[in-house]
Image (cartoon, rainbow, N blue to C red; front, top):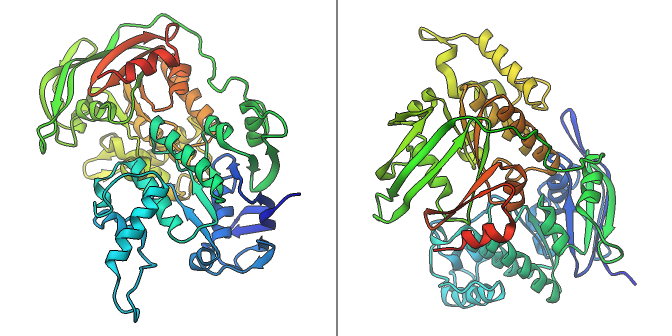
Length: 510
């Protein structure tokens, strides 16, 4: 007999001009791990915000039953009082406060009389919560000194401190490396044994299949199906077909293999250190990419991949390059700033599109033109007609789904935001494009579109370096790949010779 903890009936949520949810039905059994999947814009996060009270009762149609009782949550505080906690991809921790202050922030343990905080009890209880999530650190440590994976565990400890019964996690592994992701999944299994029910939103289908008891698919704001993973085997193609409404076939679109051209970009003997600590971050790195080639750059978090990309792209972070050379099209280059790199034909698409890649409060047109304003400027004035024309061409070329280039970027889905960031750099007319985590946080349909764009660019003669933490993605898209560990290149493999086992063996070398 089923034991239902949550039932959401006929949930409809409308924003001005957009119906985000339409008669969605969603049921979760007590003690299960229930995964919620769908393309960007399918309504997953909106549904969870309805559940948690971010969108209060009265802002939506439909009914929420929790433990068999109808609920009218007017705020997050209301849902938390019932034992429901939500953890977002962008963690809500205060970096300058200690771990124990973060865990009990907003629900402090008070002394008798309720006027002052009982800090001794807070530290003791915080340590108990850290033990529950398997994080062995001093609770007095500042959160800013923790890694991303450890911060995620602090967020879960914070939820457990509120006696959570239903835990909602929105893209919890999007920013984690493979090891931290596996630790988090193992923690969710442990919490399941303790009676905690989890709802997890994720685009990583392999993780979903590894952990889910039930998988519910949303598409265009409606419930498509719920799949019981214990009743019969569920496969990635089946999930994808339900998510996108069609069979994508091979998630990595085919590309005609042609002999690579001349070396377009080369890094020789690149060594670099951190100016604050003096620690060597990169040591004697050598790699190259040829014209019309995709070269993957793989490695665990902290291997130095992004540091390498930024340091050769005009070094905007101020690392100290102690030796090394950059060559483009057979000519030695000296990039004193990103502007120099852009002018030479090098572009870098940031892994952090919201923080460093885009100006979210501005429109698509503004963002696309940012990397190449010189081409649009005549004297001191930007030619707005030319700016509109160029932005429109790029929108159509890479299929940014928007009715107008005047649309604010913040209102786009993650996949379309990523395409705007790529369009921005394509407008700079690069010959070499560095893509840092190009599909992070976007759904499988949007990933396929990004891969298709990459294939088209290299077929047109561009050279691409792709940094990715998703090993299947690197293996599926690269012509060659380099593996990094501890700031150095530990191996180079052709697409034909590369396997997950070989890459991981190189990635853990020290």
